[in-house]
Length: 292
Image 1 (spheres, rainbow, N blue to C red):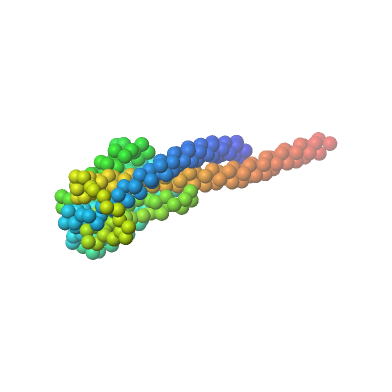
Image 2 (tube, one colour):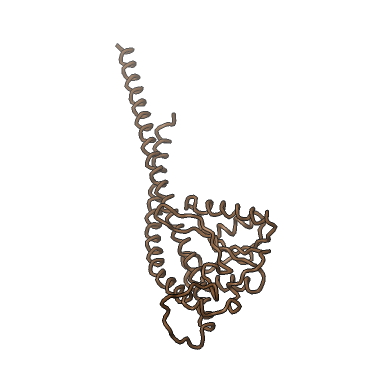
């Protein structure tokens, strides 16, 4: 059994760790509330842009919108969003495990893969396994990312698709569902299949007759970049909220574990202290008996 001085040091160390993890849990909770507020305020804008595009979808031809045109897939581009820092539980490992399965599947189908990364953990994971990353977005960090960063990412991905570098673009991120649930998610970014255009667009039974200036195609093409930027920004917000929620859960678990460990160490310390006192009393009684 450890001596009393060593046990006191261990109890003090565990208490210090619990204090740090409790502070990190509070910081993660505060950041999570801010990100949730940003996501909630941004959602109506995203829905309105998408609604405008869907109202115009039937007024443009399929040949006028290259971002909707499918092609034979030989090269797949994947945009991966992870965290820059650790101490967030299984947030990164779950996402990267799902990404590894997708990579193995695409390689089994004979397809080439190109990567774009936001977050140091995903970039490090890919580089260590020998994958070449087309671009690693370093500035601004995800914690401070704004709509301008999403615009930069969307422009890069669209340029790779329209330039023929990739035939398909996937988004790999973690979707925030609740304070305790965040799910690794993969979504197709390009070509766009969630909105049907041209003759495939759904008919509006009560469509209003309105004029569009300068024309449906021009308005549609000017709205599309905005829509893609909102999709990327939503992915970044979802990932950031998931990261903070996962870190909050991990730090809460660490704080609780430190509390249990501290309680167990105190029991051992009290038992050792009691044994030491008992031995001293026995020595005193034995010495007194020897004198008499």
